[in-house]
Length: 278
Length: 302
Image (cartoon, rainbow over all chains, first blue to last red; front, side, top):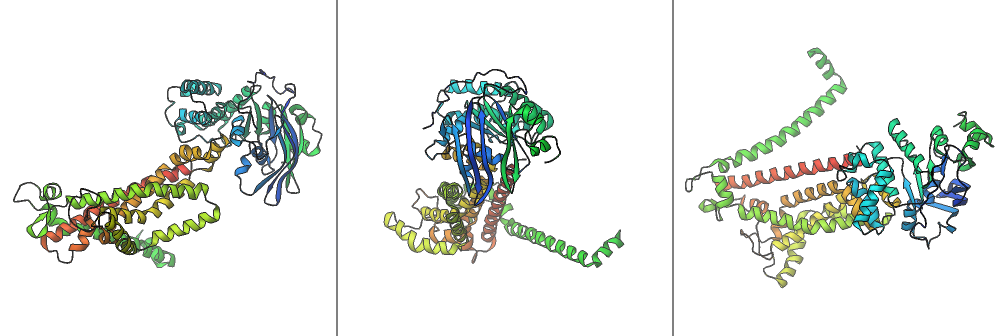
């Protein structure tokens, strides 16, 4: 029931920084989402829209369900034993939580980047070649072109073009993370989920990855979990603030970045973003 | 300095440490003694000059001497070395694919309850004394092969019995090598929309390779050193077999069969076989250890 190929390339162009972004056009609509581990809810009553071409940052203290929320969006929660998800996630008008959804095709359209870089212990080229082959790109010349493009998109091409066949594990941490982003981009996803993509990196690599994230805005829809408020403020168009209430993670406030940081409506949000709590 | 040492020894903790160190040193010394004993017993065979052909006797014995006639002073070990290698390789050839499939099934397909039971079963299987495998081989397997291709007691019987014996080891070690692959690699493969077969073949197996190879080498070392089960089913004729159905005698079986009456150079030649086996098995264990360490290092993402 999912369409296999993205229907159009995203050419929303450069966004101005920090400003309330693009014409809001929701690509993901989350309604009354709840996540249970066994009988305990870890996340409840989450409703929000992820807008096309924008960067949405999810902030809040550890353990309040941000990563669980992210994992529901590409159905990675299917693999977590004992986890139950309730509620609706509409993607292109279809509920992606339905049994009939082809999760392999879904994960091609919604890519994911993890906290710790996880390149496969294969060559740099093979890291990108494998997912392409898997998703039916048979023509080797086309694969070669796509690999080059993806590596250029993440600014890694000049650094690795002469050693594509050496192990991906020989790269530095920051390069590994950019390789992982390239590995996701090579499948031309529409949405990219990022779970604290900079937190395991040194400050300089972190800076490089953050710049890359800003460059992806407009071409992809990004959802980023981050503990770094300054980073959320620098990169995000929309921000969601999560907090634990009675041991259950809740979405306290969701809105445009500037509004949430400068004029939050909730007192808890105000305390958190000003550093008074959290 | 001396006084400090003595003070330390007088304390209870100090005495405990000292006795542990002594015990460990004793174990190392014992190991070295066994090696020295093997060498000294094998020495006459290793150095004896061949008066007939000239040159080193060991070399001639290993490679040129056409047969094993110890009473006539002809000690051609080649057929038995070849038989040992053939039995080992054959057993690995059968047990590796089967064990790998078992390991993959345990890690990725079996339900938790089934995996627990299956693991227990494999551990039990690995613990069955080899003479019991030999009994089964002698009374069931050999008659089956006899009906098909007499005489039955053969290279094939030895390979089949040994492969059953090492299968649990390979299955358990490959399952644990697969389990030691960092979780985020598996998650990463899932998040890219790879099918389960691709996740296993392209990501998990390459990542677990060194652990799987280490387990296989350990199993090979066990196959090479195994005596009783092979002795019971292999037929023990000293010859280079032309087919799988001919009887063979492996190096270990030769030692067990002839030690009781061997004297002089004959006896030394058996010790030399033992020395050779010990060194090869140590070498294999060392390789397995190095590879296993590589796997653990990788699992920690260093």
